[in-house]
Image 1 (tube, rainbow, N blue to C red):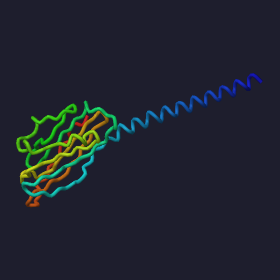
Image 2 (image 1 turned 90 degrees about the vertical axis):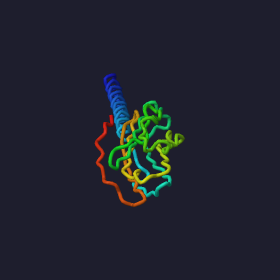
Image 3 (image 1 turned 180 degrees about the vertical axis):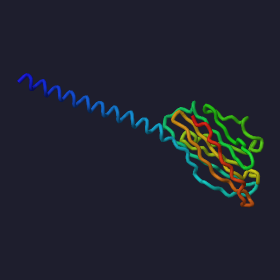
Image 4 (image 1 turned 60 degrees about the vertical axis):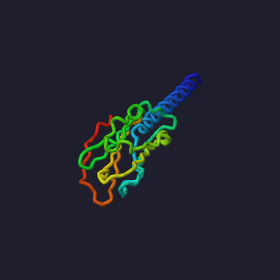
Length: 170
């Protein structure tokens, strides 16, 4: 009788341990999966604009609702004939000095939506030379990704396409 009780307790304990192990494994795998799903999206892939008008470019990225942006890095550039930086954030702080002089005083960011995982950049007084491919690279403690969109100027002609190098996204 005692042996039978011991066997039942033993199998019950073994079953409990298997369940706990399965739950822990599931938690570990789901946290790895979440870390691998950091994504940057562009809200519009192509824009048509007129000279001296304004435009709003917007990207979204995966974010935690209570995330800290001490480790937020954003690198936005445009490429037509050469690459020009038009917006940059390092450790959660905007770096206006890194901006190319072509965009000086013409790019404003909407800081209120940044916490929601949205990068909204208003470019004013558009010029023909602003046409090109706009790339935004985002890196947080959750991961990194990039996305691009196209801005076509008043002539409607697209500038020569440029293949973005694979930027280091670590």
